[in-house]
Length: 227
Ligand code: HEM
Image (spheres, rainbow, N blue to C red):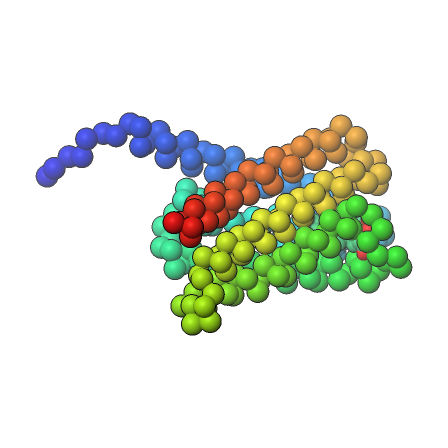
């Protein structure tokens, strides 16, 4: 039996990357749990059902499912390490499709309940996030069929890069919209101004960290496409 030499550098790199992944999941848990706990306060007081469903659908839709659809493609993500590329892609589009359903229904609920629409920064960024996420689904379908696209003289890298860019912009604007929701007086009265600021900081960091891998992938793909 041949023993492979102990590669400390490779091991410590792996341990760091997996720990980073755990850290991101903890962040995700905090970001999803706090708005859900806030939404439950609506049930307790028997008020604001539209906002209740809005939060209950949108936060798990964007920050949980869309977030997991990003993480699932990362090399050191807990639940997807044993999946091959085809399986990772399948998990990605299933999560992204579920997320899109929650986003559309969650936005519809609150838009329908309001008389004047998109008059707040929260609503404006939320609308941009929704539009980019819907377009992202179309570019995602295109990215799944690169060979068919070639027949129409559309380079596969174009659909893949545009898919990543639409996805990242959708996720970033959803993060900004979420930060504005934490700035609402009703939320600050519930959790306290300092804790609301903490929520904004955690959301901003989490959103930026999650976008890092897709941005790096699109950079690599762009460089390869130009070569
Ligand atoms: C990523 C998550 C979220 C997104 C993308 C989002 C998006 C939106 C959108 C598009 C609207 C409709 C605006 C309009 O028709 O004028 C809206 C309204 C609203 N959302 Fe959210 N939302 C999110 C999370 C939250 C959370 C966590 C809260 C509460 C803490 C919240 C509270 C509200 C309230 C109170 C309204 C009605 C007032 C307004 O338009 O600002 N939302 N949201």
